[in-house]
Image (tube, rainbow, N blue to C red; front, side, top):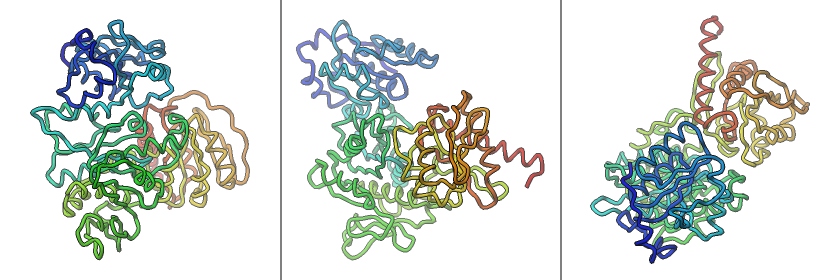
Length: 534
């Protein structure tokens, strides 16, 4: 937790604004008295506020929530020295003053959109806005402690898996490594950890990249890009521009996806450190300066002296586990590229792959009952992720739907129509997906699983408007969706819950949605066991 506040507004009056901020480049810089508004009291916002208080800044925290959890965090921050904590809808509509003066800086949580009223006010007042990652980069150097290197990962899909794979490979090499960032340990908490890490595997969302400008990773990768978060960024072009920031200032290697021209263009346009290399990965046979696949082996033809004529074996497909979908191979190659740039040996790449334990809710087998395989891929929160999981199974009863985030489903449905035996829709924002199904899969039965009842919205070859959903809990909706899917599925089918949408309309997170699916499937299986159904 942070220490007592230090009100240094008077002593620092002569050095303020951009000039002062430009000099804040280490933990040991003079942060005392800096007036900072922190937006958001969630995981990253709390860590940012607590860190800045510890450094002696004058911190005001704002959040629109008034829940018991938010109130508890607010009380804690007041105890450790926050100048103020403001909660509720009114608190986030204006930019607060600190000690009667305008803030020097705003540190925002990733989920806050640039057009949010408080952030827009900061922009009009020419007050810089940083994210927690920008703050962490500026604090990474601390006298008397080891400075951890950064390997950075972004992409529309596969970030969390690739960060985990990278961490596992680094640890196999005997390095003190930790996965931080968008999911898992907040990066500011890792900086303050008593453990002195050698290297961070940093997962960065497009939101975090939007608010970061100074990061200079040893190696970086954008795994893939597809239309996502258009509602936050305003356009797909703005989304791509923020994703491309992953490569800025990279020191040794920019790793890109050879099967996606957009990521190569990002590297071509990036301003990097002199001597930095462009290295591709592909799930096909690699050319020079690539990692790829040859006869079932993952190989490196980039980080070896003899790359013109040969490649070094990194691992076999079996090292990825019993099921190795194409996107998992790509993630493994991307992680291997990062750690090979960092100097990890091929042997330790293999050991890291073998030791890696996949996270929950990512193409997770839940049960096989009556010949039907049940798969939880709640982490598939956009069409690109859902496409990867749909490609791994055939035929499929697909459970899908949620918050669409302004994306199109036409390509997804068109590409996988032949795999679809039936579709069960959940969520309150299904209109776009329903329209795509009617256009491109008119012969696939579609059921909307409204809370409390089941409604056929598209029979084979027909379609009609559905009635509005009634309010009910996500748990109840998922239980009904699983029951509907069970009636539609037969031996040899896969029931795949890959929503292609965010979860927050009916669930607190993708994990909550996945847990509800797992619970419903297990209850179904146990019910069959009790009744003797086979």
